[in-house]
Structures are given as structure tokens and as C-alpha cells.
Length: 256
Image (cartoon, rainbow, N blue to C red; front, side, top):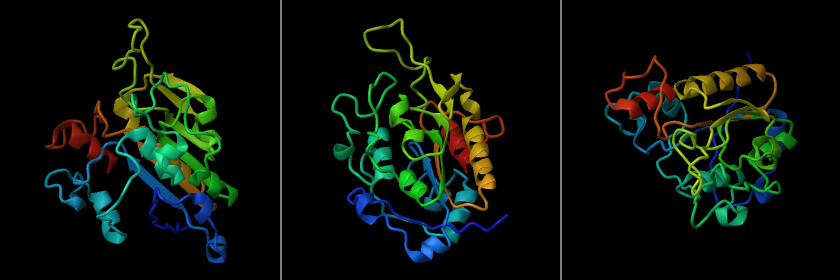
């Protein structure tokens, strides 16, 4: 397996990628791979490398000790949809339309999503010959024009919105007989509704590792967006009940 060269980078919501996305001759010659691991609702101090006394995250601690650990970081919003749009585009929600007054995030009955005209990290890297994958939670529009495959990703394996937006948790307002479902996508095909959430972290991780192994000779961008530790909290049998911090600790330790 070829040793991957990984470059750390900071995404600022105040700068458009239209202005800064330029590939230098040095990078063009030896293109680095990019992996972004994005965990939903993970707290600043919930990793042991950031001071948590009882949640054990030795793998992430090792990554921090061998690379860089940032103690000051800004996001474009405090909630899911606009912050994900900011992460992927470098633009504030007021510029992408990913904000709202009544509903601050997208729901399964939201008619729109991230506009197709927006440039994402994936779409720009794809132009430079990168393989691109979105694995996990998307939450930037569940209808086909807004899904990852229309925003520069070659692969999409995961769910289109939060794990609590399922028929077990949410009902459409004003229509108590209708209940949401949580679809699980492989590309544009829904392969399951209401997947076993105790297997989500394991399942998404295995797909991400498979994607890396299949692209050892090609430059790639992997966006691994874990649904956990957003509530409701789940973990597989190998981690359930193992953390002294309860279900939350179980979920974080499985991600590690």
C-alpha cells in the first residue's frame, strides 16, 4: 500500500473557495490525500487529548500527538445544516441559503437544499483528478438535486439527515398519521429505511476504510461524517455499556 500524504487544513467561512482553490505545481506533482472526520454534536472536551478524564480515545489522541491539535477554531453556525454547508463550501449560510428562522436545519419535509451552483471541496478536488466520497450524515438536502453526487462526490453511503429524524422520533406537524423514515443510501438508491443504528458507526467506518484501500494509488478526498454522538445515542455490542460515561461515552469510544 502506498503511504498516503495527508495535509491538514483550516476552512474559514469568510473566504470563498472560488478565490483560493489553486493547485500549485508542487501539489500537482504529489497530490496529498484529504480526510475530514466530522462528528455530530461531539463536545470540545469530550476527547481525552482535550482533557476529558474518563472517555478513552487513544486512537484520536495518537493522531493529535503525531499531527496538530487546534485549540481555537471557528464554524459558520452552531447547528447542523448551515455548519456543514460552511465546512464544505467555505461560505456563510446567508450566502448558500442554508439557514432559517423557524427551522434552523433541514427536515425530511424541507423542499430544498444546498444549491447546485455552490462549489464544494469535493467538486474542486474532483476537477483535479481526485476520487471523492461522502460517508455518513449529509443533511444538506434529501432530494436528488441536492444529494452528494450532485455536489462533487463520486460516492455517497449514508443518511440524508439527522439520526433522530426517523419514524420513531418525528412526526410531520399537522399530520399525526404521517411519520418520517430514516433512509440509508448507497449512491442514489435507498437500500434501507430505519437502519439498525447500533451498527451505524461500525458500518460507516468499514465503508470508509474500504474506500481508502481501493484508492491507494489515486489521490482521494474522504468526508466521513459520523451521525454520532448526536442523540438518540447508539453503539454496537462491542462498546455498549463499556464506558463509565454511559451511552454518550460508548458512542464516542466506538468512533475512536
